[in-house]
Length: 462
Image (cartoon, rainbow, N blue to C red; front, side, top):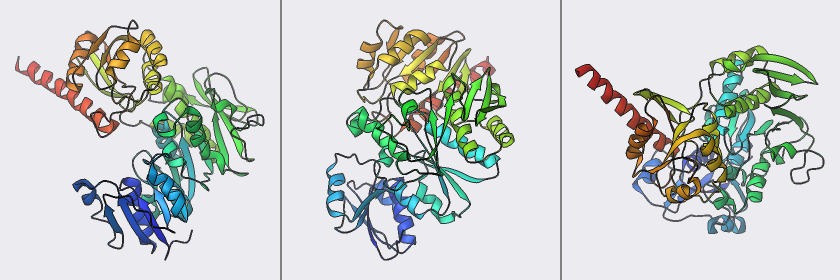
């Protein structure tokens, strides 16, 4: 993609916008970076940019004839989104821009839940196989930040969200996978069909020589790229499958507690499931997806087995926090929708006290209610969604309301004693009280560890 001398309007001063503007300016582009907000934090964020980048605050600026780079936070129904397609010469997001400028190889991970774990696990496996692999994208570090040091040997394992995919057109990952699909972000896309269509863009430009990793245990994904499935047609790419429930001819599956790789109908045991340190069936699924993708990229089985055994996971995903008075605490703040909360609950063999609630996304709660009935000793609700959740979960388990996270931890500890489990798996996003799930999880962790430290001090002074 020719950049030098061309004009670009970058809208949004988040991580992706800052990275895109910096990459374009470094290549000699004429760049305007704008944001509808004007805050001290934004002004501080742009302070380190090349002075050639023109920054405008308090308005979303798109110059006629520019190439517009839109923030993934801008929904399709937003006026600036529609205006971009009217006045700009071309419209794309940071993912598309990155792909057109990146000299290396791109693998892509999307889906509803498990994206970050699969992305980092896949990068870890490829590193174990000797590749210069870097995990980036929606998990926090912008893809365009990789461009400065990238070489043709660099492998970018890109976590891409539905928000990022809707502004792609030529994005063509050599290996693409979708973890699973459940209702989420419908307020952004409008309905489930539009959400699924956004996810399907990860394979839209794939062709012969590329690979799609298909999760056969997901009822929606199981039909993708089949000849009779018109909504997501294949383009001649290779398809490999994963399943926890039954063997596959090509891909990866679970058999008798062992991970197995399959190719051409020949199955080769890889390593025991027990070698993976992460608990839960959802992490078995995550591992199968990462293994199948890494194997499709050419990683040898020995390196995959070693890499899987040394992977330790990410914070805020069923993260052990500590034990107090015999009660074990787990931080699953990344569970920002009911589907993810169900997955967190299913990871435990013993009944848990669940802390749930947050920003109201108006997603269906029936599956979460059913999981609470099967897995919960009690539920503590907090946040703006607490009232609707209380109505949906009534009769499934004892329910208590809390005023804030500090109060929720206190109540949950009372309900879980002795020798119970407290799980923060909110089933809702964090934006009613926090800047993101990370801040929410960090707050939960600090509260729990503060209580543990106080108990330790008290025990030493007695």
